[in-house]
Length: 321
Image (cartoon, rainbow, N blue to C red; front, side, top):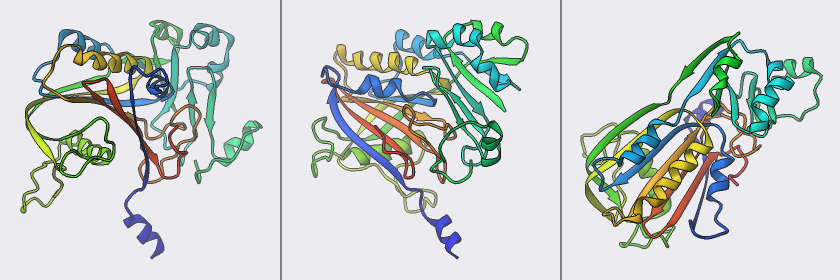
C-alpha cells in the first residue's frame, strides 16, 4: 500500500526564480546558460508576432549538427589524439544515449574535459576507480555535440551518423497571455501575475493544452491565470536535438535585442529543457530521474531589458545554482 501511495503522489520539484537586468554587470544569465551542458529542447514564444525575422530564422535553422557514434569504447575519449583534437578546443560534449540514469551505466563528457561516470555497483567495482556513492538509488551509443566538422572523419571507423535538430514553427492565434510586470516576481493582485503562474502557463502552452476551461473538457480544467490579455498572434518555435550552450547563448542574445525596435509584445520567453537521463544538471551537480528527471530553465525577457530566470530540477537534485 505504501508503494501504491508513492506512485499516486505528484512528482515534486525545486523551482528557483530570480530577476535582474541584462545590463547589470553582476547578471548571471550567461554563466547559467553556459554551464547547463546537456540541452534537449529549446523553445521560445513571442507574443504579437506572426513571422520571424530572417536573421532569427537563420539562427534557428543553424543550431546543429550533432552525432551518434555506435559501440564507441570509452577509452577513445581519453586518448591523447582525442584530447588534442576536441577537448583542448573546448568544443565537444558527449552523453550516452538511450540509458536510464537510475538503472544503467551512464557516461557524460563535459566541455572542460571532465569525464563523468555514473556506474552500477558491479561495474564500479570492476573498474577499480575511486569515486563516491550516488545520492540516487541504483543507476551504449554515445551522443556528441561539437562545432567541428572533423567529428565525422575522426570516428569514421565506427558507425557514426550526423543529425540535425528538428525545428517546429507555429503561429498561435487568439492566445490568452498572463499580464506581467518585470519588477514583480510575486505579482500584484488584479494587476499582474506571479512568476510561478507564468511557469505553469508556459508548460500548458508548450504541451498544446486547451486553456478555455470548458466544463465538458475532461482532459484539463487549466486556464490562463488572471489578469490576462488576448493577443491576436504569438509565434512559437521549438528546437529538439542535442543543442550546445553556445548556440543557446546566441539565441538569447538575439532575443535580448528583439526590443531594439518598438514592438507590441511586452515580453518574450526562452525555455530550455535538459536530457532527463544526463548524470549532471548544472556544472557538476549530480542529477537523477526518480519520477520526472526534469532539469530546465526559462527566461522571461522584458522590453526594458529586465529578465526573470526560472530554474527547476527534481526534488532530489541539488538546488539550482
